Picture 1 (cartoon, rainbow, N blue to C red):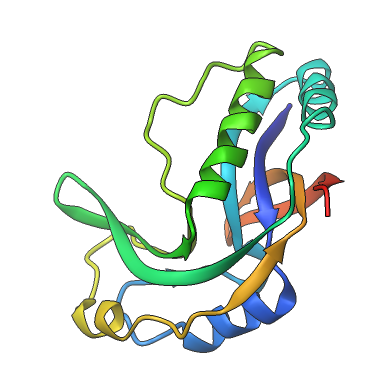
Picture 2: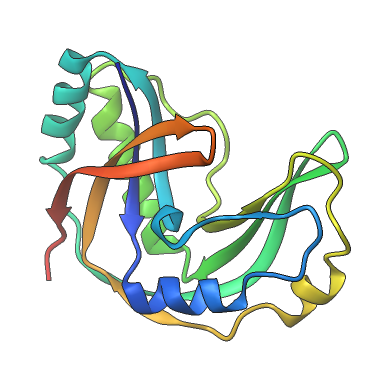
Length: 176
């Protein structure tokens, strides 16, 4: 079985800038540099046949490369408890368009459509208990870091006791 997601692998300069700013929030489990990415679509756990079909479907996507920049920071909550600290990207429109193309391609191989609204973001930290004060971190944010999105990547995620370990299954370039 394969636990898959489709995403944008970030350039090292972007990862370095994000990692340099991480810290100072009680209860945060910070993502490692290898875990930093922008998810386009979570696929879930699938068998080898479906994983191969997913890869074939993603290979048919045609989209132009585009520029992004990191933007504001934010949080996701569940039941009034902070679960995730993230940094967004701007502009969101080209990422959302790419997400929609990925979603349509996956539906063609039997993956159910994404039902949640899509907010492009890069997860910085997760919380399992109480989150420390975040006001200063959210207010300070990150200096914007610009980069070009020139490929989509199929990742496999393996859950370990230290967190998720991501490996690249395949990568497809976008049109320059």
